[in-house]
Amino acid sequence: MNINPDHKEFLNAFTMIVVLDMTNICRSHAVWEMVMNELDRREDPQNDEYLPGCAMVDSCSNILTGDQFYNFLNHNFDRHYEQNRAPLGLYFHAAWLKNNPEFLDAFLYWIDEILQSHNDVYFVTMTQVIQWIQNPRTITESKNFEPWREKCTVEGPPACWVPHTCKLTSKEVPGETINLQTCVRCPNNYPWVNDPTGDGFF
Image (cartoon, rainbow, N blue to C red; front, side):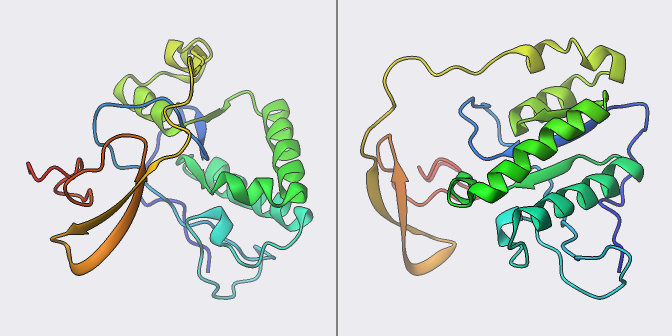
């Protein structure tokens, strides 16, 4: 089963974007929803077997070696790049790469290879995608797109060495206690879609 990355039409006049979300320190002061397209985890893309995809890379349980991860990245990149150029989101926990050095090596090699062979591909964070959505640029203009040239640097000491552990409740999950770790004060309620700050104002 070959599922297109997204059913929406994307213009080929624009650049291919690969979204990386491991750690993003810069913050946006609005709530945005980012699409998590299903990744095709079949070993052989020519095989039409039914194998459910995965949205998070580290939830693709059949990736066991660096070579498999490299092939997985290439196949999913090609699906996006050669079809409608929908952004390719690569979502995983940084610890997955840290705990699997073979995967990290394959990932870094793959990034270098993609950048060397494609002058219209950019690896960006979700914040940078939102900046591009708010102010889209053509391929030529993207090379000097100011928000993508900025570096997010952390200045001063970390927000906290030991975060607060908050035991919270939510109207959406009655009777459950949910743990939340934060470097700021504990909110009154567990943050949720209709109450993103957990203060009960929505």
